[in-house]
Structure formats: structure tokens, C-alpha cells
Length: 354
Image (cartoon, rainbow, N blue to C red; front, side, top):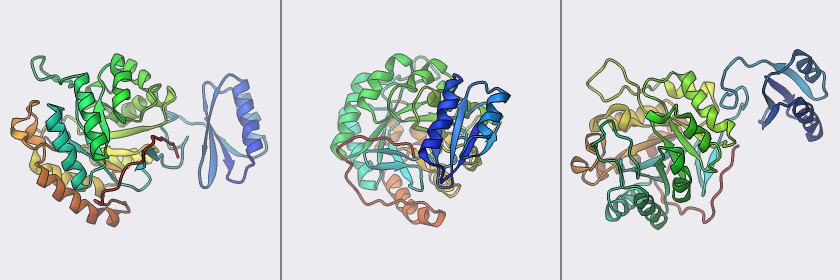
């Protein structure tokens, strides 16, 4: 249930409403938008309380929300969430590009690629230190050592870093070295991991499960939000269909649908979404045209010999740079801001939920 108050409702009246809600043992989440203030109620709301709230000063309406996800819903939070990390905004009209290898292989490899990502105009360095693989004998990543290598490369070249975390036990160590923590498709419904990420204090990029519905996806995000972490990004990375030509089917319709249902930023992953290098560029552009707030793209200096064996979906550095140049032209056409001008990161960390 939500309580809708007018934009000119005094702060004192908003506080009175919150106190009434909390007195009944419920949680109140206040979201101040440009046109109205929405107070979300978490918990079972008795009809008597709803009627009481409806009659309070400053209240325009009380509306029951039927969705199982509350905090992720745009009904609860009408305005777009903007996540700001060291001067880089994710959401709110800015386009962010995350680029790098599937996995960190060595200090030299990740340092070279970080320089190339920065030179092309990317803002975030991606790379896995822990890799969930379908086969138990495949390369699984180099662990904490890889986190340190990537953190050093990111700091050297002025890039944010994002890495995948696989278990609750590794959340704290990943949060120590990375700016953004990624939840892979196989862990979208790892609820113990999601609960832990709700308390990690770092932004989270949550990838859609390869067979998950929008409702299941948003409920997974709800676990993180309910834990107290407001900085969640939704990532469409392709779903499993009957088609075998591509690794997955990138669901472009998910981008506008999720933006209608939720206020959270939406990122597209055309690398995993197609699994084919020649399709990454057109699907990246299509994702931006569909309204994506950002892209996460695999790029490797020698993709055909990458340790993960996923090089077939990784761009070469010149392809990555060419794509970003095209995105600079495309972004303003679809109402996005993106520039390949290299700007230094702020020296201090910050994360706000607007």
C-alpha cells in the first residue's frame, strides 16, 4: 500500500504520517518526487489504518499495491533512481558503458585492457575474479588475487570496477575491492546471497535469470532493496529460447517493460545476450535505442585465446572503441547523454538514491 501526499505537503505532516505507520509496526519508505511524495508501507495493512491515513492532513490518496515487489515498483518510487559513484551517474539520462574481459587473467592483461577501456571513453572496468561455469573443469577465475589486480588497474586508469560475487561469504571481500558487485544469471534466485548484498553498502548489478519472468526478476531485486541497499541495477542479459544460432535471445522489450514497472536503472548485456561477436555492436545500439541506461560489454585483446573460452562474444579493442564513438552520436537522438571525453573520477566515493 502507498500513501500519496502532495508535493507541497509540509515535512512535519509527512513525519506525522510516518509515525502513524511505524506505530502499527510497519515499515515506511518515503520517496519524494517532482510532483508528489509517496510513502510506501511494508507489512500487512489493516483497513482501519488505511482509512485513518486517508483522513490525515496532506494525504491525497491511499492506494493498495497488488505487486509482490514493493520497493522495486515504480508505484512506490515514481521517479527514476540515479546511482552516483565517484562522479559517474547510472540512470537519469546518462549512458554508462562497462567494458573489459570476462575474467581477470593476469595483472598485465587487466592493466592493458583498463587502459583501452579508458581510452575508448568507457567509465567502468568489468572483469571476473570468481567465475561460475557450467562445467566443473572449466577455468573458475583466480580469486582474491584477481580482485586486487582489477582494483589497481581501475585506480590507475580512473575507472570504476565491477566484478561478480558468487556466494555470501565472498561479498565482503568483493565489496572491499570493487565499486559495483554483480550477481550472475545463475545466482539471481540465490536468496542468501541477495540478502547479504542488501547490507553490503555497495551498488549491485543484478542479472536476469536466463529463464526468469519480469516478476521473478523484480522480486529478486526486492530482496536486495528490502535489506537496506537502494542502489540496484537491473541487467537484461538474454534468455533461453528454442533458438540455437545465438547463445541466448536478448530480450530488448525487457528494457522498456522494466522501466515501466520499476524505477531502477536498466543495463543491457549484448555480449552474453547474443554470444556472437558480430551481433554485439548492433544489439548494443538497439539496446540504447530501446532506452537502456547502460551497457556491459566484453572486450579482450586476444579473445580467441581467452582463458574462459568465451572469446567468441568478446569485441576486439578497435571494435569496442568504434562502438563507443557510434554511441556518442546515437545517445542524444534517444535522449541520453554520453561522451567519450575522458573525465577524472572524484577522489571520494558516494552513492545516492534520487
